[in-house]
Structure formats: structure tokens, C-alpha cells
Length: 157
Image (tube, one colour):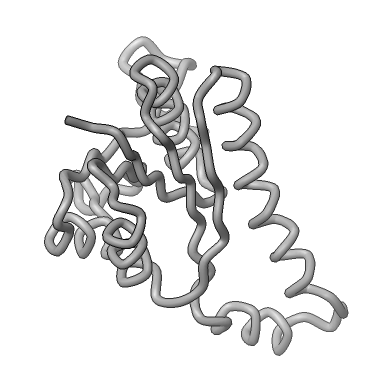
């Protein structure tokens, strides 16, 4: 039986599709939802500081991460779901697996990337690692179909 759902989010459209589904599940069935964003070990912050002449790039990135979590929290509250949010730090897949155990998750929800390789479906390395090593069931949510074409495909420009 599912009581606790761990949702991994970032600022992608794929993640938003997963968030909407997880929020819907939590609201309909009374699950406790915990939405987490994992900020990778500061490596990106350091790269941004090095590459940018603008001060405060890392601070803006932190506000962006908080905004992602705030959006999920708002979606959940509007749907009537009980939600917790957390910004975590470290190697993404490892931290997600640790958090799933610590939280006592019955289900882990992640978004599936829209990227494809050589016409084959693409599952990112983080998702693949979580699928392989998770002690809980993992729901990989496909992206929402593009509304511009009947087949859901992307428009070419």
C-alpha cells in the first residue's frame, strides 16, 4: 500500500509532468508527498562563478531551485495534497536513494526526459541509477505530449 511518495523535481518540463501526476496521486489517495530537488555538490556553482563575470550567479541559482520547490508546493496545496519540500545537496542519484530510505517512501516518482538517442527512448543516467538501485517502486512519468501536433510530436522549424 502506498502512503508516502517521494517526488524528484528540477526545472524541466519533464519534471513538471511528474510533479503534476504525483500531486494528483497524493491528493486523490491521501498520500504524504515529499518533493525534493537535489543540487549537485556545488560543481555547477563553481563552474558558473568561473564562467560568469556577473556576481551572485550561485545565489540566483539557489533562488531558482527554491522557486521550483515552491511551485510544486503551490500545486499540491491547490489540489489539497499534504506536501513537504526539501532542497538537498550532493550526488543526485545517491541522495535521492538515501532520501527515499530516510523518508520511508513507498513510491519514488521521477520525470522521463524528452531527449532521444538515435530514435530510441532515452532514460538519463540519474533515472537509470535510481531504477536499478531503488528499494522502492519507481514511477517514471513520460513528458506531456506536445499539443501542437495530433501525434504529440515536436514541430520542426
